[in-house]
Image (cartoon, rainbow, N blue to C red; front, side, top):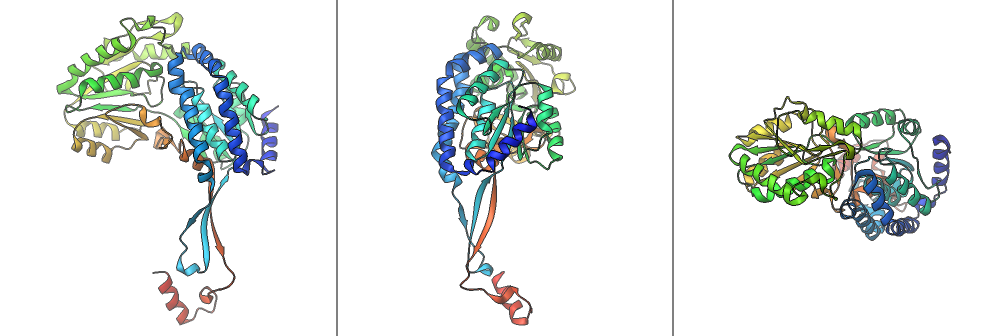
Length: 456
């Protein structure tokens, strides 16, 4: 089925009104949940082949999070879909005002390769919950996982409701030429700009979940041992192929050496003395990205790590010092297991650096100083983040996740997902038993006086 025909069939099905029924949507989400549980072993095997993810990490970062999101949405969906009554101005007496959520219609979800299952399924959950028909385009870079996603979707849904389109650039281009009612994209800034450009042709609203260089700041009041442990976890999870991974560290010069020693100790404890021999240590997605990372390793000095293995596309957890802001590694999102460390003397230096560059998707601050915390949160703009931890701000359905500026637009997870994939209509229901004549001509003096009283 070509993309044009697919979109037409989904639009025809949406117009039947079937997906507007909230009980029907709940049934669809329950079907999806059963299928994911049934195929967990296949999902684990696929992610092992694509990214060498361990079964534990697959559940922690992919299937477990998806099932948690499904459970949360199923508990709250009826409440989200209920009309919300709001106060009516006196000037509109007698009337009832309320907002009503309606689905956009036919939605395109384009997902990336780094968390290929979660980042396809979580937006799909939101789109279904809101009552849309959905076309999912998974990444061609994670073919095994994309195949499992397609099997699950086929098992659960008819293609005129939810369909998976496989392929690479040609398929992406063909899909973006179609008129969707909403586009959800997760990926690079460069491709995100292309998606937005194509969407503009049809004035299609978009959600862009991008990335950027997410800073990690460690001041001298921080608990250095805890900071090192949590930075190492957040940075080297999935070999740094995480959009919210700490991209670089700014550490106060007084505690730099202590942090570096603790990070080296934490890397050895978490991954072993020889990480490339660790069966639970993943791999770089492909040779193109592997070679790009080897080039970035030429920046600064390798403090520890640096081992590589081309036949398995692996790079050991690596920390770089003596890095300058002008070095290549500081000019692009790293998206790999390389961590540059730079120093600062005053927190104002870090704030100036962060605000002088594109707004990052995440920011992490390690401090026990309320003053430093207030300064950073007041002046630095970023999508989301943590104080005294990394990564975990996105692992909840109770808060939205998204970027700002160059790191994206729109927010999802939980209620935010339902709202993202819905258009909320504002409606006034006017009653007929009384009609105040103030708004009708002629506009006499007493009407102006009365109108002024109403609008105060």
